[in-house]
Image (cartoon, rainbow, N blue to C red; front, top):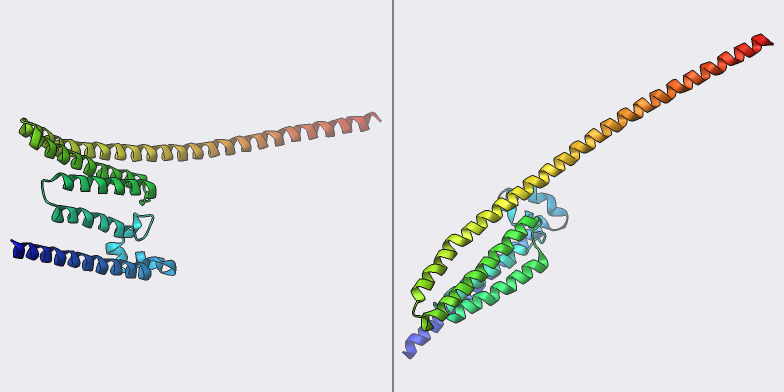
Length: 233
């Protein structure tokens, strides 16, 4: 048993070192790309270069240029929990739950995306991970104490399979409707501004023309009075 334990520990150590090496290489590449294309005076190269046409989506949607590194660290953390923590254990669910709560708080504080709908979708995805971890924790608890464990497992599985995609679709519909309503309001505001300008310009022109007519009438009356007064003399 001792040689097998040592072998497992060596394999885990090698896997951990390989993951750290890949994270280091990825971080160095992101930093180099940031220096070359994103930072300072090289910002124009992001849209004009081949990189900008293929991988610019990593930076265009974020308010912070290097936020993709945080996202990769989050995903690698979940993979590490799934690989190194024993499966079907309460500690695995608790670790995923704590990590998800930390990342959702960090996300709500930073709000890394430029568009509010992207921040909402990312927060909803992290909340879905929290609910999935809670469901796994409930299943693990009921497995040992509840005789109706399989019925509970089936119910929770149905909720996770059918409920979450339905909520995502509803969220997408609300986002699309909200953006369409906002665009319609902007168009109505623009049209109202155009009509108001046209109406105001016409009223100004008519008022100017009416005032000029009144001035001409008044001037003609004054001239006629002067002529009559000179004739009487």
